[in-house]
Length: 165
Image 1 (cartoon, rainbow, N blue to C red):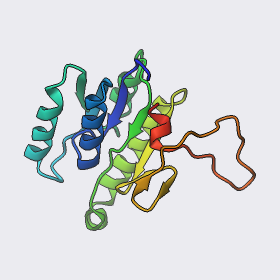
Image 2 (cartoon, rainbow, N blue to C red; image 1 turned 90 degrees about the vertical axis):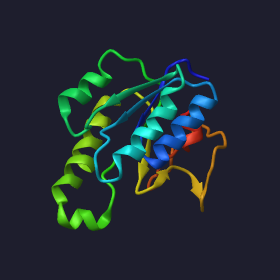
Image 3 (cartoon, rainbow, N blue to C red; image 1 turned 180 degrees about the horizontal axis):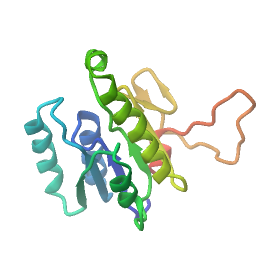
Image 4 (cartoon, rainbow, N blue to C red; image 1 turned 90 degrees about the horizontal axis):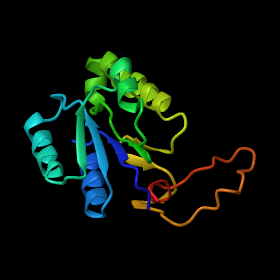
């Protein structure tokens, strides 16, 4: 298991909080990032963060990932282990009313995280589902032979469990 902390974006959200808590319970250090915006009740997000802050292995950064310079500063000089990107602007109906909030959070924020991860391992969350090897609601965590090259037309995917090892 890596000594480097896992960076979890969207750490105050439902899925990010659950992942961060499980990682902390398993002895991993976690750096959480969240903008704690008001789309969902900020008091609920703050309550989740209070639970995570009980661990000495948790560090939190209140940050809008769409802001390039602060996001660059987050990655600069830090030796993160895996990065699990779960932060996103939620609410499909809201996207019709405020499409620019979606572009900022979900595209610009994603680009800034990708830029920070150029030389790191990354797992992605997409619309409440984690991208990786999955069957139904179960995420596959079997060993993947990283030496095997995907065939043309196939995607080389790792499960979240593989990324967090």
